[in-house]
Every structure is written in C-alpha cells, then in structure tokens.
Length: 301
Image (tube, rainbow, N blue to C red; front, side):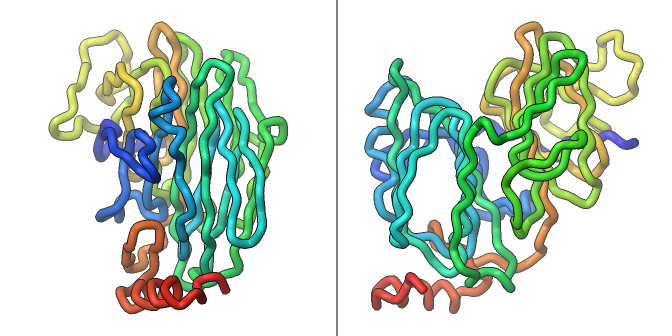
C-alpha cells in the first residue's frame, strides 16, 4: 500500500453566486485539470437568511452533471422539463444536464435559520455531452452508512466502498463520493484506486493527514511519536481541501473533537474543456452553438 502524496492544500474562498448567495469555493472556473473529472466545488452555509435566501434563479446547464448534497435546511428546485422537488437534510440530487436544462435552486433555512450544503460539478465526456437530461434524487434514508468498530462512520453517496454501494448510479465519471466522520483521536486509512484523481474536503472538526512527502509551502510536523516515515499535515480548520497525488490510500488521524470530511475521487477524462459559466463543452464552437440555442429558444432538446 502507498500513501497518496498531498499535491496541494486549498482553503475555500468566499464568493457570491446566483442572485447573491454567499458561499465558499474550493475550485472551479479555470484550469481544473488536476481535479478532472470534477470541475467545481462549492460549500454554501449560513445562519442568516440574507446570506442565501436569494438563491439560484433560473439558469442553464449543458455538458455536465451537478451533485447537490444538503446537510441543513431545504433546497427547492424546479426545471424547464416540469420537474419540481425539495432536498432536505441528508438528501442528494444528482442532475445530468446533458444536452441542456434550465432550472432553479432556492434555499430555505431550517427552524434555526441554518442552511448548509455542497455542490460538486462533474464533467461529461464528449460522447455524452448531448445525452438526455435526467435527475436522480436520493433521500437520506436511502444512503447506506457504514459504522466501523472504532466509531468511524462512512455515508456512501456514490460508488462502492467497504462492501456497500451508493444509490446513485449510471454516472459517467464513475466517481466515489463519501461523507466520512472519524471520532476523536482515531486514526483511519481509506483505500482509493490509484488511477483516480482524489480530494478530501474538511467541514467539521480537525485532524492530521499523513503525506508521502512534504509538499512545498505546507506546514509539516514530524516531531510526534508516530513511527511512520510519512510527515503529518496539521489541518486544524474547516473549509480545507486536500488535493492528493497518485497512491492507493489516504490516512487521517482525527483531532480531539473528531473530524468530518467529504472524500471524492473519479477517473480523469483527459479531454479539452471550453467554459461558459454553467455550460461546459469541449470546444469554443460548441459553446457558441449553446449560446445560439439559448438565444433562439432551442436550448432544450
């Protein structure tokens, strides 16, 4: 087994999207080759309605899949195909935009006014850019949770892990998407297929990740009593994203309050990318065709 080296540590940055939703973005809208097949990751959370209630009014998507995972509050959605629904705490929506869809997502806080969720974008390969749009909505009760003997909890949203399979299927990037909680001071190792790109995103608690080497510019601590040769990356705050290099395992030791993080991996597509906001194609000409379709009213196929 080989520990995945840490390629980069990123702190999600404040930004604003939609009609004025305050959120934190870990990556997106630029050169995302090292995250391939993933394109963007947003953490939207707030305790004040003014931070999120304006929502994400009607907007188009083409050529990608969007994954919305809600932890607190509700996200109401509707689209140009007539679909409507609401995602509550623990629910997941996986939307394959394919050839084109126009939809809206409107957050509503819980009884305490809290709203928290994540959105991850996954690219579609050229062969599926214009596939038929579809939704997969999964309630929290249908997401398998594994509880290990040491108290570690893993919710398997997508993919196969520790003998369980997540309920979302038929995804082009064949991703693994896990919500992991490791109790205080527990050390845990998680396998990841070597050929995949992978990242972890901490959103509660703190912990240390073992690294095969000390990446430049990252504070390391090798003064502890652990006998492993790999240095330790002390990530004490949340909203930290760890981008891993190749290897077949990730090891974390939870801090005194435990740690909770998302672990995502996917097979890189290695295809050219052309961006125009929520429309992601392979060439500039395809972007122009999409914009023409929007103007001509032929975006929805």
